[in-house]
Image (spheres, rainbow, N blue to C red):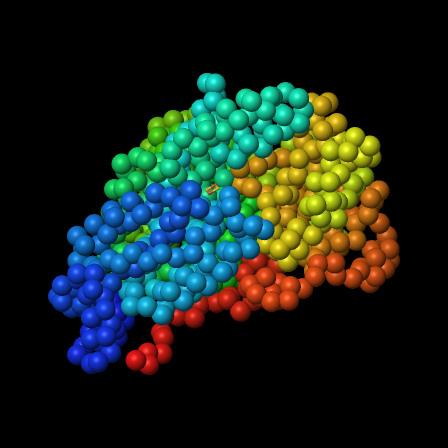
Amino acid sequence: MAFVKAEWPRRLRSQEWYGGTSRDNIYHRGWLKNQGYPHDLFDGRPVIGILNTWGELTPCNGHLRELAQKVKAGVWEAGGFPLEVPVFSVSENTFRPTAAMYRNLAAMEVEEVMRAQPIDGAVLLVGCDKTTPSLMMGAASTDIPSIVVTGGPMLNGWFRGERVGSGTALWQMSEDIKAGKMSREDFLEAEQAMSRSSGTCNTMGTASTMASLAEALGMALSGNAAIPAVDSRRRVMAQLSGRRIVQMVKDDLKPSDVLTREAFENAIRTNGAIGGSTNAVIHLLALAGRVGVDLTLDDWDRLGRDVPTVVNLMPSGKYLMEDFFYAGGLPVVLRRLGEAGLLHRDALTVSGETAWEAVKDVRNWNEDVILPVEKALTASGGIAVLRGNLAPDGAVLKPSAASPELMRHRGRAVVFKDIDDYKARIGDESLDIDESCVMVLKNCGPRGYPGMPEVGNMGLPPKVLRKGIKDMVRISDARMSGTAYGTVVLHTSPEAAAGGPLAVVRDGDMIELDVAVRRLHLDIPDEELSARLAAWTPTVPRPESGYARLFHDHIQGADTGADFDFLVGCRGREVPRDSH
Ligand code: FES
């Protein structure tokens, strides 16, 4: 249904707090005036919350307070009233047991912050992996007009003449150390080269993927995703977004107007074209659940199959986000998809334009970074969704990061009962394993760990690495960093901790992977599998109290987005009147 702008002027929700002469109105206005705001700012203009995930322990978002100043400038220019609001900042590189455990908590907080306060529109200032989906999820559940501004990626890392990609280089170098090909001193020297400016990971990891998908969904202005954090154009983008949100409030252009099924389909295809992170599967499923779009794992497989991966960025390719920006960034990719009939051109974006209007005239400035289709990294860049008796509810694999020779493989299972077991035994030279085996890791799903850590790309045994082998088939219910690579089956559902078949795989079982036909099979008789499942008992204890208890009791499977069961859906913007 075509979007129809609301009448303007009209009374906004912030006027419930500020617009009148009652005791309550005076209470709300008077206290805010302690920051020196003149009375005429409370005249009914849009109040814009700049929801800021800044934090010094979230280094990827460490520059967002400066960026917020540019957003504010834009809001003022357009006649709005900006107020910066700190919100839960989930840091990928510090949170334990895993940042993923806190995405839903952050989303819940953002939803309540937006609804409970006099906010007519929101600028979502995000960057690090979980901050982008969590704020979009929270905003979607209020349906208050919102626009995404990401902090932008770090500049290219360089070490001894080579590009050093965030995360990707870390995984590669740590394998090289295990294989005896790199010294510890060189590794330490490379550390600083990996992070030479403010910003998020500079590979096509989860942060860059989610920034790209926010843009493809239409939730950010065109071109937002790839501008480096320290480029002056990032600040211009922030200011323009500040201007834009004021008009969005006047028009009442809401998340539900933008986050349609067509928008999600555009984002899934975009993920294929950019070689995006498997984490996007979980985040988009959860976001779709917030706005009532019936998105499934099978949509990911179906929509991505005929999308070639043309963005030549690590971990699938060789360049980094800075190079992507100079080549033209995501608008070039969206134009490509549009020309190939793979974009819903009419999908509405926060700019008020359609997806196609925003990109139809852009150009590709570097065909080695954004490749022609005939030179695509892989012809089928989507996420492969595997099913079989080992994953009745599905598992995912990223073909562009996998080894072609392992896409069809039968091997003997070597089982680790959890990540501690893996760490304790993987370096043991007497471990009965070789490159033909299938490594199986259990109890790393949403409930199992808890929070579903990025350990699915478990490192290979040193004795295999020393042979020069770089990849083996690995299967788990865990996630994998978007910066990682390998023939890695992830998100196996139901997870082991919920009694899925993964829980009953044993050392020596034969496992068959056939990506072409999307099959993942545990080669034991059906009766044997049924008997093992019947005898299974939970091994992960239920926490006694606190957030861990809430998480354990309400987390859903990865196959539906790992949201809390009670947070699915949109609860709208209305709030009961206060009691002052
Ligand atoms: Fe924060 Fe990669 S760790 S963006």
